[in-house]
Image (cartoon, rainbow, N blue to C red; front, side):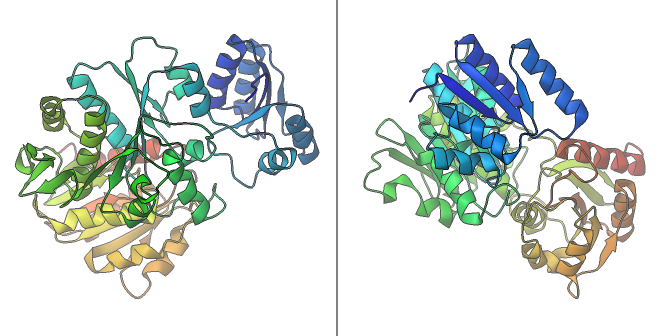
Length: 458
């Protein structure tokens, strides 16, 4: 595939890093973006100018068509909607679409351990990296993080890259073949970007598209969609398959402990984080890290030290017998259901009797109705943001709902109804982009509201 001339469709963080690498390597680069925000546009324009590139802003469909016809390949920015005209124009002109993953692997031969899934990608990526580092293996985290993979490969120190692989990148990858490829789970998400649920699923499955005898596929036996697409079910895929799961798999939960094949890694009672989805994440990370060269002792050390990541069922504090959790990262109904059920199921921890749920934000084109299944364990649902009325309809007749116009008010309303032994959790099921700039900002505001309420109580 020729890379003499490349069109960057979108010019945010990832494609800016791509542009730097392409220019440095002597390729002809054309950049275009539908930038609407003036401040963002000015920063992008400044970056392009620093590379002596012209950034075409807000091209018409005809201009997109002309741009595509005059290049060898197109690299879309992650998250560009599948309805964007650049994809139809590229298909019509038979111009290949590739991703930053394709480029990074073309330019760098070091091992990639890739992790995808609707939920838990970041957690498993960070955990696996910690396990590898504990084994003395120099590791870098890249991909759907603050550092694109094409940027990470500039550093000569890492021996391996643990890559958080989003559907936005995988779906446009044509030749990416990580040495280790883990698919954690699948549920509806990102339908504001993908054309359909099938398209989103196919983008996830692309993590195994180029699997061969040098690939280790990590498969979650508890997820039927993942199992149905596992390479072992396809004769043309000759890769090694390693499984994990709660109660089954090569890496599994059994007899109150986490196991790697026939070797016990750690007793659940020794862990600082032991909700069901957290145990599944630990097993997945252990499978990834082991395939990347980590020892059992390193796995155990990292597991014992693991305290979790912020904004993912993170305990903010307790007050009058009520526990407060920040789960702002939960931006799909499936993630909300997993978080709430984990709080009330118990097993390896003291369960909460019921949950006061704060949910809402900007819907990502998802069906919110699966959250109705939580009604029997919910004390109240405090709805916020653009999706407030939709969530009220989800719970009508099955669970009390209240509407809040601010995060502080939402915390107050939830607190007023929560009883001792119960939990208040921000688990929105929606994106943050109506009230906030990111899920991190939303989560931090929730934490501030909780701490203001409990007065710094531990």
